Length: 224
Image 1 (cartoon, one colour):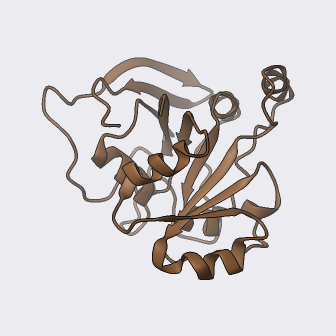
Image 2: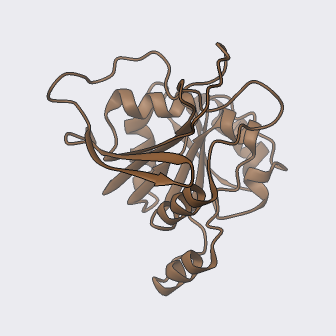
Image 3: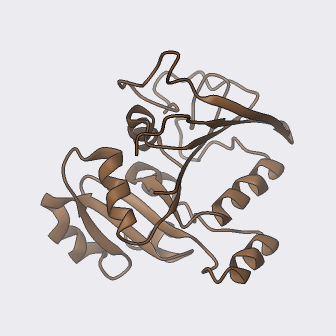
């Protein structure tokens, strides 16, 4: 995989969402445009099943100049949309499957047949070996010609990639407020993360986009 980007928007206390029926708004218009510019440079966007169920994300490129840039390069308007699920329990009528680019579902091998029966009309369904984690996901997507991947969450997926060190860049957007809900999802859960002097990320830039602080980091030793 040539480039794996991780992207997260979070509160000052590290939450990527709040408890409740509506997704937490963490971005600004300027940050949103910058995020879509990153999407426009990628072949595929990856989320976990919980994010697909809760947010029903479109994962599209929404700005005309960015769409034009992709068309000039001979690319489809929108990147491939990828969701990872353990159970295959996703609604084929949800927003994830009804708009945007082509869809891929990666599921555990033991539910592959049932998942294809449920979702085969709206997505390409592929199996993953149990416990293969981020390396298994990347291997599957490479067979589809994905060279530039953007991982947008949620917490379980980000934890897998961060713990494996399976990324080149981390884009972290920080909103200037606190959530304060103990059970609300955070950037990452427990994991054996690489740390120490040889594993620290390199901060390449900090930017103020609207009232959002964006920190761009590089992984000097990606494990891919």
